[in-house]
Length: 146
Image (tube, rainbow, N blue to C red):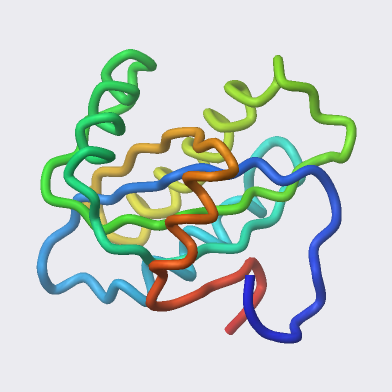
């Protein structure tokens, strides 16, 4: 994404992560939490995270996808474009499963850190939509950065 930090290797899965959160939540800390949460997933992965403006159309898509896949649906949101770095051998059939694994790790970490006050959802993105979102980003985070 940006910077001269070490680059992650592996297959990149672009996703949109949204979080409904109280006004007093530190959005930068939440972005770093999203980046670091994937390290506790049951499948090894890392993440580059970009804080992006909320798009009302994408909010509707996220809500529909969350409902369809059994995730909690968000209300007022903060959005992150996330590049999940997973095993290079990842197939297209594994994308939904790995997206769910990443979501579960992120949601569990957010629940633990914010005592259930943050509700999250995740939506796979195609490369074009991901790149467009990243171009609008205001702040960036990565797994292991402090």
